[in-house]
Length: 303
Length: 313
Image (cartoon, rainbow over all chains, first blue to last red; front, side, top):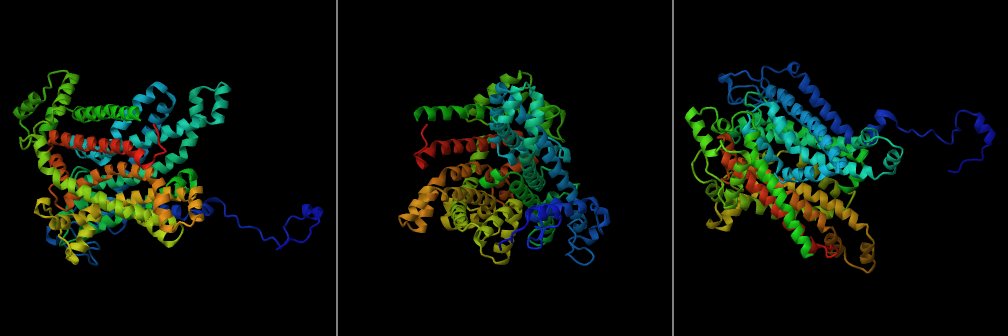
């Protein structure tokens, strides 16, 4: 459609645009962003629901997740016990809802800890030439121990506690994060604006703070979501093989570990925590993929 | 070229040294008395003392590390605290199932994942591509033992096509051997397949935009020959790199898969060792797996020149 000739003076004077050009609904702000990035919207929503579920666990029709009741053990799922009961008569529904707390806490805590430590190591490695070689050789060494095995080995030494699980998984994740940060830092250092800052006599800490760190936020956010997803899976694996959170704590991995012996006859004990864990990790992965596409188009092209 | 090989081989030495130092130090990083840590909760003071002496804790740290390294270089991985058997013997007894599982998984994964990624890239944007990518995200999100239980439930318990659990040695014949390995291999391979398929798709997308692909098309080359001869060959390096790096996933996953399918391999050995705090065994297995991982990736690096003659060192 060709626009009819418009008297420029009139346009300048007239505030509303003529009808022939309907205002383009540029979706802006939060909802526009969600509309353009459906994976972020879906992943974020599911994750938010899981977080709310974890926080409000006591109000979701749950009973004490650790209450034993041998009289009603291994009941099939029913109206009273939505997800059935386990071999000690504990309500699987309550355990699964409360289990979200452990898994999400471990996931978020590892993501935050690994990001902070990895960022620090990566920045030092990218800026301090003599330290770079040493740090990266150490990271190479740590990376050549498969991360689950590394976490298992660390857990074998310590008492099983949520803190130790977080520590073990964090140590296993740090090499990858610091390598990523180092790569970003090295490429940023070549940027003209960093040269300009150096030429202007800016001190290194200020350069790091003003010019380097803000530019690591996008790739770090994406990486942190992947670390979070992988941490939740590793936590469940550790608990599953008996090297994770203490059995008394109802984490999804622990519920599955306890249901293991009966899985051929009472598969629901394993099924429900597995379903919740998978959905949560899927949500985090979707969020990560969406953030990667939105924040880091170059990285998105690569994968 | 020769100089590169020498340099690359030499470069693995510090990496292995750091792995060894880390595995050795694990015991001393842990809070408390290492002898008491090894001995566990139910140990008597005599047990602790016995272990303290066998560790030689009275001598300097680096001396102990040096001795330990020399023992390992001679193939002596120490003695299990629980069974009193040499760790190297225990590993030898358990290595066949794990090796079988990994080789089958590797072959299965590569034969499924690479064509999957190629087709996804060829049909980019269509439902096939979407299906492959959805499968990939899903596989990344479901823990390996859940996939294992799901497969065992459907194909072993409900359909009764394959054995639920267990392992049959290769010496009992190929049929029973492979039957017992199919489900564990698919379960273990799911993440690996997703990883390889994703990288194959991404690399192929890039390669398919190159000029020589257009040239091949212009000269009338068939679709299949373009995809698998012209494009895949040029996409080989990143794909093979990921296949190598992904072996870490296989190693970690094998520990769990063996528990699910009751396969008496190194994974079971590791899990049992953890539950008994049998530290020499844990050290031995971690060390072995890490060295295999490093060596596989070294071999892949050296093989690059075969895949891509453009690479000259």
